[in-house]
Length: 307
Image (cartoon, rainbow, N blue to C red; front, side):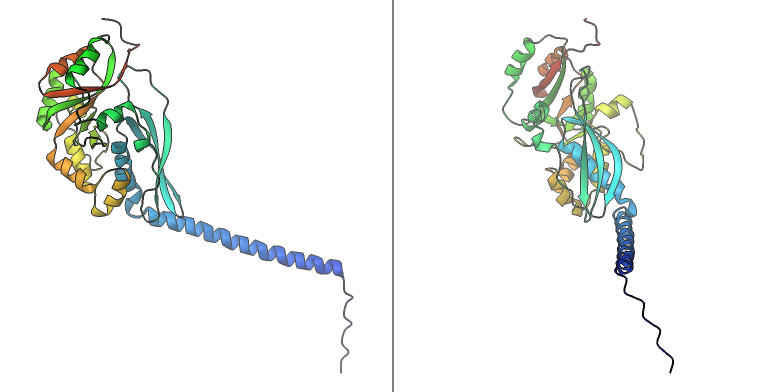
């Protein structure tokens, strides 16, 4: 019977080193596996969330609804899209509207996001913005700013001041009537009010709020397209909305039913004018089709010489 070899003497230092090597190896393997799982989860989630051009539709629906939600601001998309395992988001640049010729104000950047299931997250601005222009839009259809009072206010202001105002019609105008009105006065409907909703924010639309990816092209006079409300563009956007969008739209104080009703009727209850001077608003106010004008801002155009 062969003799058993002598067991080596127990070496505590070597034992501790072996245990440490084993622990380090185990930890390294676990961390590598976790890193691979995290990458797989992130990439997999990104692929799921962006499948079928979903990121483009997110911008089309949420980005455009955000503009309707904030009619007192100029909104431009900056970057899209950032994904995480549980959400997808994009950036927008926002700055307040003002009279043409006013010194530009600083802009802010905000994030709009939706979760893995397509539900929009907490929204910036909106009702919390509380600008003079948004308040003027809230007042459309109310008895505030009587025509005689507005005439008195305009009468005490210098005639060459640039203005930001909401022109409200006595009776809503159709697309052709609105275009004829702004053309007659050399005005421009930056945003058109397609709903009368006293005490609440009405549906408004401005040229460039959404661009049809099919690119129908613009027909006719460019000024007529940009200053006439762009009703066909509004109808195209409403046409892409689906019933499941209603939950997100309600986060923007909108509803699918209201949007479809406003787009189908195509009636302009008023418009935002940032081009007219005080002198020109006085003339607008004389027109019997104008119910009232709500001033949201006035300023000197520092680049325009005095008449």
